Image (cartoon, rainbow, N blue to C red):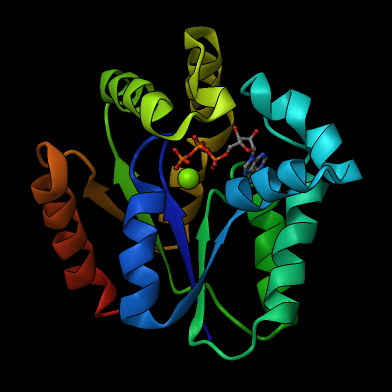
Length: 195
Ligand code: ATP
Ligand code: MG
């Protein structure tokens, strides 16, 4: 099985690129954010607990998302592998993932990192708020908290995965609209084809 991480700050384009990548490489797309939003929509206990944290732009507890990932690994067998989107987001989660993979006798295939500057994050998320109406996209302070949380808790993963020789970085801002998205996509294909 292949195990890829799609990494990057909020609004980097992970969800957008994931759609094409899972198709090209026959992977199961697991977005922890999407799963959590599904729990909220379904009104589950987990969703109720997660909602306040997500609406404030904070992370949900590590154990919660770790359990979701383990669950997905145990559920989907009929694929070439997994594309993890939005996980791991802390060093603790990255270590938990390493353990999950070791237990399965598996190894991380690579980290696909999409990088965009903080100013671009703001512009993109403000635009997405109009299109998708996500609660955590609506308020500037929440967007700022997500960016701050990214820098404080998630950015250290870059060093973590560089040290493991698994880190591959791509410019996530290659111009506006579909053309820019396509350029990013092609640059990822070139590397992922080799992994
Ligand atoms: P994107 O713009 O690519 O959708 P994002 O960071 O804005 O990225 P999601 O990945 O959808 O949005 O996550 C939304 C929220 O869900 C996060 O702000 C956080 O509260 C929670 N969340 C998602 N994944 C995790 C995780 N691995 N650990 C902790 N909290 C998470
Ligand atoms: Mg997303």
